Image (cartoon, rainbow, N blue to C red; front, side, top):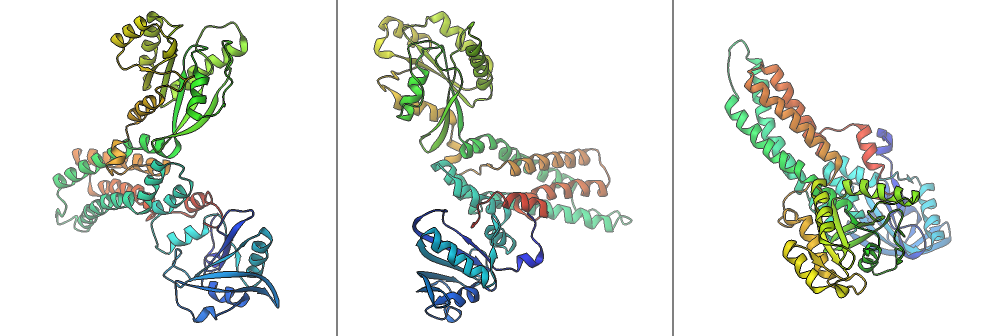
Length: 460
């Protein structure tokens, strides 16, 4: 979705509130003629003579026909979200009214906005950088406290500031090396190779931390895939229902009732967990159930967390130890959850506590000790980095650019050690700067912008 220069100078219009009937509908205009176009259909004060950040009551009219009574908010450039003249018209929420007003504005010279075009204009006009613009979309779609905080921090420039600082330090050395190229015959050194090596090593440490934070950032943004695994009839579906507080999964005494996945999201401590109730882990001759068991094993390999659930009245110590050994070999973090504590043999519970003291004892059916389970689940996610304000990477595009930056900086280090010529060293440094610039938007292409902003909703 590339925009021509002509399109960038257009005045655009779109509904900013959700489609459908509501109490109010907010229609946005942005562009050099936004106030003039709105003034043509507004009956009240002369909007072109009013100050920025003022609100005016009046009517929207098609000729002499009154369409609605409205409030019009004015934002005069550059004091607006897009840094252009902007107007927000608050109408009653009738779909008919909203459509009539938008049609009138189009007839007066506005055109319908494309997805994300308001935010794209804000970026192109220097309101914020590309990483901050992407955070606007993340903020809109944030469905938990953690994802909201991550998006808000990025939108306020936390991540961008970190990247810009790295880039500025590297630009200084790049310019010195470029200067040396102009004085090749004089054999002058403006940039100490030792100092450059120290800088690159420092940059690599920071970039490694940012790259390493992506696993946590991805969890914060998209939720933690959590598999509930165990034998048939261990109470997996009952546990899922208890955590959800609804009858999502079929509960039955018949082993093997769950033959595929049942998924739902649960907010625990401000983090979204995508719980997956799976088919039971056991040997079976039932073809359909066997497929479910096979899929369960695949799902466990890709999970971020596994709840190993077992029935205290139907599992012996040998079986528990064997299953735990398999899970440890899988390499995925897991919790040992002993179910049906209300029906358990006390001697067996004591033995289990002695051999596996980190076991969590619950009764899914009676919803007993579920808060303890939730607390332990949160501990495994480890949000300490996030809560202490460290920069967290949540965007796959940023992660990819950081990985490429790391590769380029490693080439710079290799070049210093091999004493390569300045022109090749400068090339590797410029490549590093290019990838860092892609994150914040110093380096962009129309295709890149089109891909990013086309994912935004219309009106944002």
